[in-house]
Image (cartoon, rainbow, N blue to C red; front, side, top):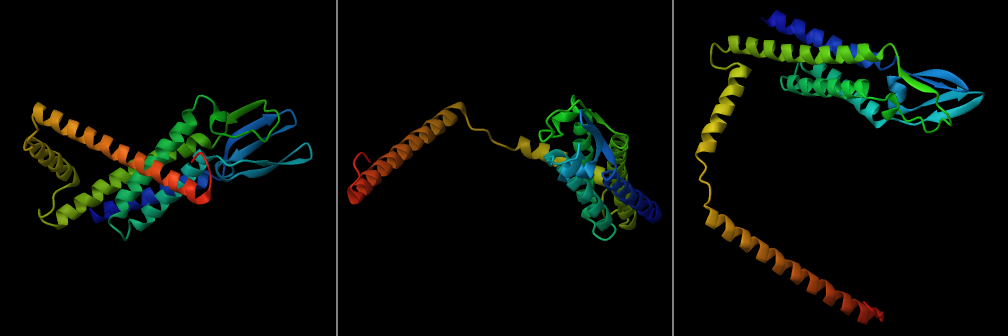
Length: 233
């Protein structure tokens, strides 16, 4: 089981590396009357310089692509740390899920220009997805699936080593919700009369405090006006 756990950790780390690497390949192509060019995911995230018709144009950064790139880097970081730090497995799962969701939103957007800022360009004929965008999305989804499998396999290996002292993660989650449900049943809810009385008390106190602050502000404003010799304060 330890071998299986290590195998899926390695696969997860490889998938995270591939996802991050694909950001350096073409994601989007832009066509203008002056020419066409392709942009990598990294260029979309952090901006780039393009030459069109002999003129240098600085394209702006896209916060969405930058966020996707950072999430992908974090997924790789936590995947690597999971070999030594147990808690990094959960962080890797969360980061890979966020990466997959972000790339899915970017890929499935109705218009590519929705997340690609082309305002520095005077005229844009078309903007379309390029070859490596879909593989990046698929590998990101695969990295998330592998992180889930790696977490479950590693947890199961720890359960076997504990000789029953530790429960599987799915059983722990189920027990948590059972305990939560039992605690909910112990709550003593206030009566309608108590709720109305407490609500009225809160509203009155809010009104009193508001009036007090208003009078204090008015008085300080008048005092400041007298000190500075400014009328109308």
